[in-house]
Length: 69
Image (tube, rainbow, N blue to C red):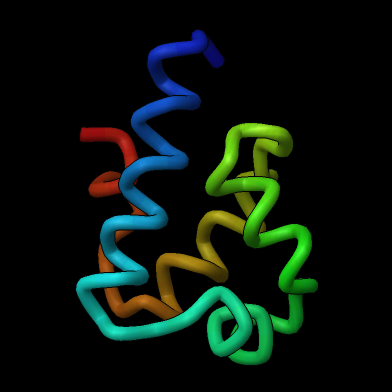
């Protein structure tokens, strides 16, 4: 993935999470992923796998493609 794609991804995950009123801790509980991992995605230190993106999108009740636009 290009740097701009990663930046878009991290910003959109954070944006949708906040729009839903969900904290990083709550999203971590909902997904079974650690809070540190969620924070690392949002800060651009980690890039999640497709499987984890699907999981996050489903818990945020959005379509996965919206992370990339």
